[in-house]
Length: 229
Image (cartoon, rainbow, N blue to C red; front, side, top):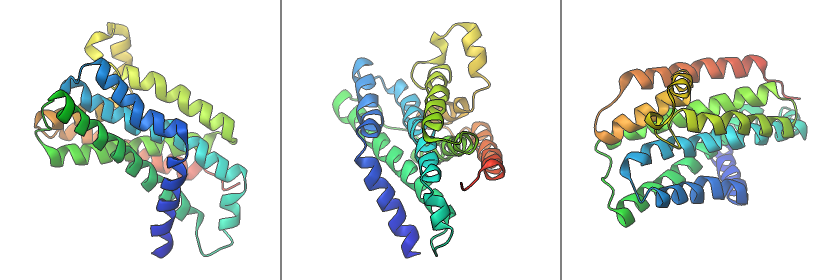
């Protein structure tokens, strides 16, 4: 229990020392919010974007680095299981995304007069599901790509088009029909839909069920493909 408590704190400390992670998790969404003049309708999509940046943009490279540096293999010979480290990374990424999202929502409400979320419990559930879902996809990428550079690159190549086509960075209604149809099949789209519905005051059950299914499928696939070294 003590190890599981200490490891996420350590992982969060390492994330806080990464300028790129801090910029894209904290500063970049705020910049987009300023450009949108605090438009409250954009905030739920930005929350999904923050989660995706950590789960797919950062996590694959971090996990691949642990494997490439033999950290996971060494842990297998100690009382601290490699699974514990991966679980700590998941907790750290979700916590970092929550911190960035809290800052974004607070800025939207305080400085731009945006409407507060109408259904906070549903928003919290949608956010956790979305964050865990993108982390599950991040673990799949880390399982497939055997080196740090490849995992980080593929994570970015998957993440950036997805946040645009799923409606996280820009509203999907602003996209051409062909691109909007592609977005219908992306895993981040139900995350944006669930967050948007919760912000408006309703709990979108079907998108949350889709997110839960992706989490189960992604976790199973990552567990099947993952190698400790």
